[in-house]
Amino acid sequence: MSQLVDPEDFFSVRSQLSEEELMVQDTVARFVDERVLPIIGECFDEHRFPKELIPEIAELGLLGSSIEGYDCAGLNSVSYGLICQELERGDSGLRSFVSVQSSLCMYPIHAFGSEEQKQRWLPAMARGEVIGCFGLTESHGGSDPANMKTHAKRDGDDWVLNGSKMWITNGSIADIAIVWAQTDEGIRGFIVEKDMPGFSAPEIRRKMSLRASVTSELYFDNVRVPEANRLPQALGLKAPLSCLTQARFGISWGPIGAAIACYREARDYCAERVLFGRALTHNQAVQLRLADMARRITLAQLMALQLGRMKDAGTLQHVQVNMAKWNNVRMALDIARDARDLLGGAGITVEHAPIRHALNLESVVTYEGTETIHQLAVGRAITGVSAF
Image (cartoon, rainbow, N blue to C red; front, top):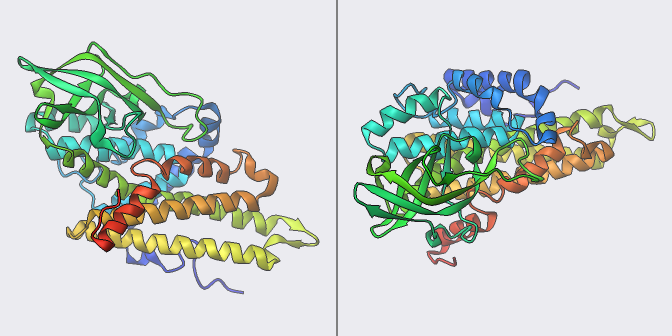
């Protein structure tokens, strides 16, 4: 039987992409195939982030790709989404690195920083010479960032910062941290440099998820931060929440790549695995499961594309990002688990992608807003009543 549709692009989403968007996707896909997939299973097994790939990621223009100027690529939102999708097809940890650098560090400097701060940091960050991390979450706060205990007090021309942050991607390899703290004037954002006395960023080890990613704690013990390092336009909780919206947009795309990787491996495995005299793909139960994977991936692809088009048109509402992140991460997690099952015993090893993606997605479904938080945000938009 001739194949009438692409099983990984059932509704021809790629036909709706511009030439530049196609070029971006194909370029990143080639990088993932050639440079990421050959090593990422070993990196996951060894609990090691592949820092050696950072110069190549920067050379491809993937850091701060949506920013205009400052040596950044100036790509549209759909292109950024496709970057996230292809990187997460390799591993969530790699997409997390780019997402944090771009959406949580470069974006707030660009959106809320002074021109001097932009000129100092953004070109170097685009080149991968300066790595950033984002300090908002605290161990006791979780989904309630307004309850932060980290605080900064004015002292002459400086601020004295005390407190801690938890579950910080890139923390131990970062040159700067975008840190959010309570002040007498409300929540403010600061650029904390790694060599400032009193600042430390120990790495969190023994993780069973995002093992190919650096996750850290941040500690501030009377860290003196000059006024020149405060983000002047970052006023109140709305500033860091806008950063999270940027990151969640990328996360709405990334897990599609993870789902495609798992679906592809499950389909190929079932086509080759012979039981009771025939390949597994000849069984109705297997076809039903693969068909459901294709359906769910297709719905996520269409949602992500529309999300990107609305973002580029300036019509995007943050609650639409809530829905997309909720739907698409849940989709990918369910597919990763089911693909692991279809691979049988082979599915529990890092020689195959599904168990690695399933474990990673257990974190992705939690960070940048838990599934419940996104559900409640959508519920509030529907009813007009906050149930938080």
